[in-house]
Image (cartoon, rainbow, N blue to C red; front, side):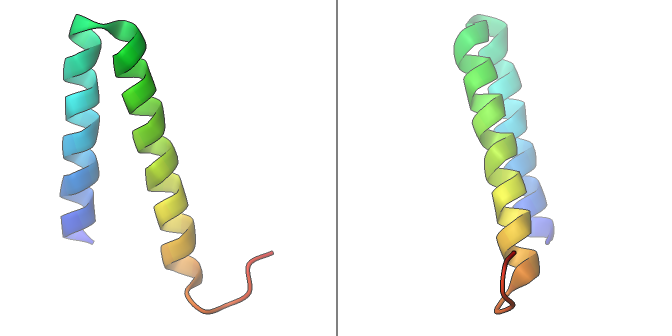
Length: 52
């Protein structure tokens, strides 16, 4: 849990840093990071159970 929190926190910080240089790529990185975080949380919480 802590490891993934630091990984995603670092990815968000990187995206914000890139956003200060180029807003388009920074926004893209931020969007991809949040989508990956969401999908990771969905698949990690379901385990072997059936999904929808």
